[in-house]
Amino acid sequence: MNKQIDLLAKKLIDARLMMATAESCTGGGIAQALTDISGSSQWFDSGLVTYSNEAKQRLLGVPNELIVEWGAVSEPVAKSMAEGAANQEGVDLAVAVTGIAGPTGGNKDKPVGTVWIAWKMPNKQSEARCFTFDGDRSAVRQATINAAITGLLERL
Image (tube, rainbow, N blue to C red; front, side):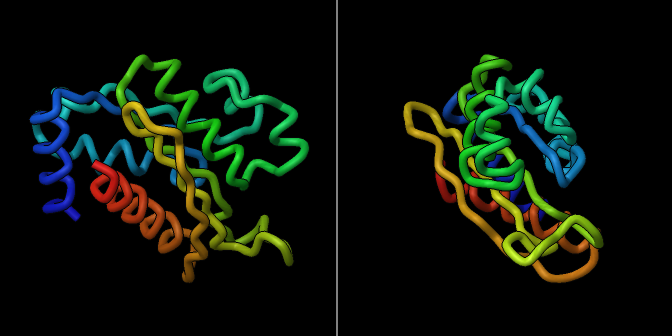
């Protein structure tokens, strides 16, 4: 993963882009992974941990109606989180994650391991993808971190 983050850093520095994260189920793990790299302040602006629905609304501007209609773990909420992070923090791009890391919280429609990741890239509509990761809470969180960073690289 460090090689991927090094490549991400190079691409962001070369393009003079700044980014932010909005995280729920990873609890700041993406921001931690990105800032483990020396010099990350050249391209990483901020990380928001919006674990509760209220925090998603207050810090990212996620409309309550989206959460009520779709649930916190959904494509519209993930996209709204990414857009909110980019807008609120005044950065070029953002990645957002919302999911069910377990071991509790899942149901038939959204089992444990269900994660939505959204990317807001410069001058593009936000896009999101649903993942279903296997394993315990730690494994789901790590897989989410890896997929979020890989997705950033694929979109740059």
